[in-house]
Amino acid sequence: MRDYLLTLCVTAAVTYLLTGPVRKFAIATGAMPEIRARDVHREPTPRLGGIAMFFGLCAGLLVADHLQNLSSVFELSNEPRALLSGAALIWLIGVLDDKFELDALIKLGAQMISAGVMVAQGLTILWLPIPGVGVVSLTPWQGTLLTVALVVVTINAVNFVDGLDGLAAGMVCIAAAAFFLYAYRLWYGYTIEAAAPATLFTAILMGMCLGFLPHNMHPARIFMGDSGSMLIGLILAASAISITGQVDPDALKIFEGSTREATHAALPVFIPLVLPLTIIAIPMADLILAIVRRTWKGQSPFAADRGHLHHRLLEIGHSHSRAVLIMYFWSALIAFGTLAYSVHSASMWIVLGITVLSAIGLVLLLLPRFSPRAPRWAEAVVPPRYRRRKPALVPEVAASVEAEEGADVADERVPVPAGLHGATAIGNRGRFSDRRKAGTPS
Image (cartoon, rainbow, N blue to C red; front, side, top):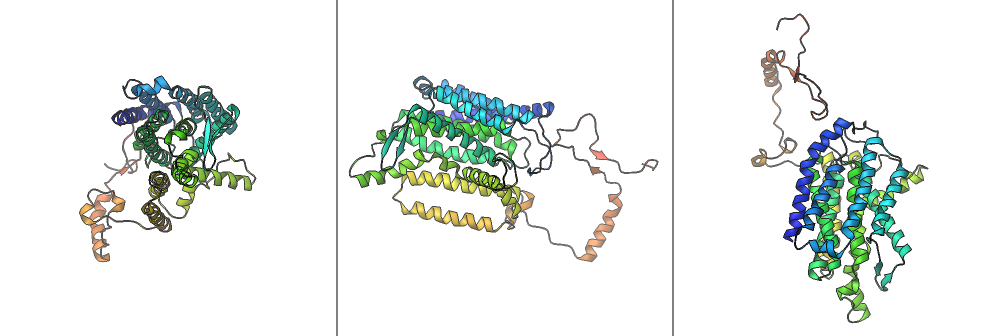
């Protein structure tokens, strides 16, 4: 566990430190597209955040290769190399898209080729565990088609949900955390070495997201772009493929006793194996709804619009930050609820807890205009929007205060914003504008 934590921290540190220079590079190269109709941000914001995330991935794999307890993953399996080669290809296409806006079909073809590169190097689904049937072996063509489909669907699900500041990175980080705990349980609890690559992939993925989030939280200073969203989507899909297609359920020793007992014992284990996309259920639901909505309107499934789940949360009155937190809440509830049920399926407390949390989530959805206020003793440490408003002054007192301050208002200088978070200010420009007319005495 210490080696995984070290790998996570190194990945997060490299991603965090490189995001600042990458932002300046994106501004210098003009990777700042104009605001589109479906965008929710008000200022042009640089993209290419996926560059820092990709180098964080490389740093995490390099550190893990030199750690004693994790170096065996590279010696016994070719999956890390397969992941790196596929990630490099999809990242390169994403960088070109962030700069030149590639066609959707070109990106779809690149996603399929990246998945094919991983399949050619051994990262593929070999069999599927099906409850009541057992392990079903797949032919090479079946495994290839299923792997490519899983990669493409996961990448586009993450890409579709990348519409608010910090949303995609946070939701993928939550999904990766749940997947890491499950994969680590298989590797450490059941001593299944085949689960070690997926455990490493999810640890690195958490580091990439955690390192990028401080720069991407609202108001975002940089976006990950398609170079980042497609990259983390591919890594998440690779983790699911590694667990589903490489871990033999027979090694879990769950097929003991009667058929009914074996089926009941296998159910919590099969849930994350057969349905690994449950940990990204919210992006998957958003993807399916988007395809149905656009097809129903006669549009292309890849045509952009403002009908995503996060857009609807903003329309009903939620603030930007609250909409992101609500999406975090539902992602964590589904991911960790599935994880808890896979560990203790016989406990009714887990089902009861999931039900109660779901009710709380529904209440939050129905209270878009509720503004929580911090207690007075905590107002000094919370953001201003959570502080209690000062009581309004009596009209006579307010008029006298305005009269006293009127003489100073004329001499005050109004600050001029520096543009894109200070990034578009070129040359020497004063911070304040002098609104006095020419010829007036200073």
